[in-house]
Image 1 (cartoon, one colour):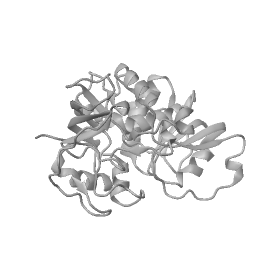
Image 2: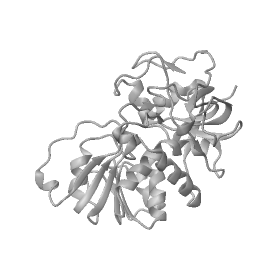
Image 3: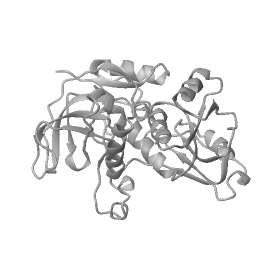
Length: 327
């Protein structure tokens, strides 16, 4: 399914089967989850995508061919996961200091590299993951972005006991399970009046759930903003205790409105999360099956990618959309 131009539907098209280059794997794709970032790319909200482009960066498949000098940890037939971060130079100041997610020359799956809305893809073996056997292909796909980026956000909150989450979509639902497993007090903020989601959060184990226009029952030590709404930043600051941190988890967010300095004072912090590191994946895929983190999914055939994207945009999904690929 090919994106030729922003703000246009994807086109079903036959393209040549890719060949793995040096250090790459050829992967036959079984499933690829749909991410909000895919919507941002399609809708033209992220600049300079590779065009034409095959979207998708939550890819689950099997190794069919191994290129020269590819990482020896994989063999033909191994199941692998391919995430958003697809390549780094390993040489810039960020890579050398353990911050490969900020690499000056990074390439991204389904954005600057063709991704997983297809039967095959190639990927740098260094940035692929072995996946936990506990999950089938559809179940594990959402962990490759909603899980990984959410986990990086969660790590940024340190040992915060009272943790708030603004937005209770795919990423929040996954990370909330980890937070509860680690005995955090969880406070969930939804769209005002969304009582059904608030009740679902309480059923999961949240200590409090309410609208994003409400103040929680206690001041928060940290808050993660999963919704791409800039106005939630000052709202979260007002809910923070002294020394608390607001973590913005989106690759794209609407403008943050001005707010009084008093809301930031007392050593409150605002930070964003950009991309992921391989360490994030190694930690998450070791932790998730122990809890175990449960994913919620809806499946679509590859040819139904536009339907999945449209339902995502309209807020009509009840879980992560996952494209299943047969052929």
